[in-house]
Length: 604
Figure (cartoon, rainbow, N blue to C red):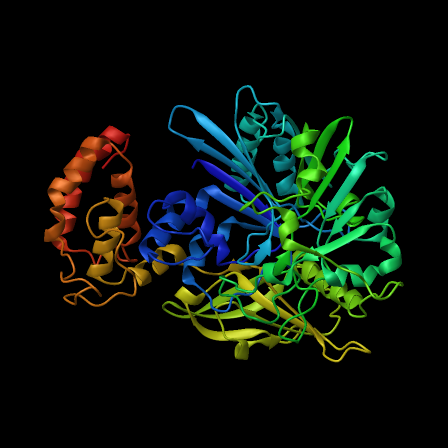
């Protein structure tokens, strides 16, 4: 994997670790169900290796607060970029991955156009995977133009290196063609909200339109022909609009048996913040009726027109905001009507054993004819906008050195803080909730260790709403600028994670792809203890047959030695010593690297 740029509305910080893990250690660690587990060594190396080539843009104020802070996030934090659309009140909402792979001589590209955020949510979503093909009919230029606009939307300056990566990926993507996924025969990329000419994709006189979206509004209903139309949404969305709005239209929801409530991300159960659009967040209750962490989250428009079946798939909800100012990314696909038309979603007879959409849906009837707006949604939108405004106010965590490796930290802003709509508290993400301070007061935290310094701030705002039984409480993470830290934090944290000879050994065995590399954990038993379920003791440096292993790696000319060199450099403390590295290994390593480095263009 050469470079990856992703976009999401909400971002789970634990899920932020999944892309590099999947790309660097897919054959070692099972991440199919979205959980970070199994091998901490694989995760640490994957993040260290690929974090500087992976950038994720997310909506400012829409990062989830995890249940626990993980120091591994230090290696990935530079790749998090908060963004906002140019139009006030709108949402940065695209879900896209642009990927470039290389074998050293040639490159290939892949695009993923999703409805799914980069979170641990268990919702029903869509993913369109587009692979580079010299004779493909989908032009990659719109994706290239979209990528070039991303740094402009960042609420803080993007580093020169990150901007250059995004621009370089856009340059190669500009000339790429992508194949259409079968059975479609034509396709077009549709970025929205970035100055393109794209607008509503569905013509006026279409046949059998199908609208699948967790959120709807009257403006969209007016755009879609009512005759033979089908809407798939959430019960609360239908109730808010009222049955009169859907007269003559078929309304469906997920069958309760198709709902999922299991979340893999280690995020707290309350105060997660807005999930999909302003106005759809969490309250002080354990769950909220509009919270989209499970159930339907896909956004699809399907219709017949001009003898073809058309699909519009991606991040855009069927709302006016999605097509009038939100930043979105979709793909428009066209294929034969018999295999791509709306009837393929709702066949008259399901084939035996085939899971079609109609098998997990059930009709829904709204009881009240008139709209039933939620009284707290306006407050939720105001709080979401307040959190986004805080992100643009230049938050800083200023660290004052108290003693060696210990700091006092205070929160400051480089511009005026917006008016608080309620009562807001803040804390560094590595501190407990009991360490939260009131926004606007002297927000100071004393005696924080270097390993617990983080630019991420947890923000919680609570607002009392007239007519509501419980207060609205929204929580998010903002990324501040960390000022005044003299030490190399990532190298220091690496040394805290690899703080014993045993842990260094396991990392080396992983890098050199030898026995024991994928079976040991950073929190495993001490030296001399037996691994659980194994009759063998832990391996030692001698077990690696180090000289033979290193010479073999040098003969292959692969990148494992460069990774070992990077590890050895980062394991040196401020005095240049490597206290947890065996002197025997250092002698062997220095001899091998002295022979290999000149061939790689380096000097001693």
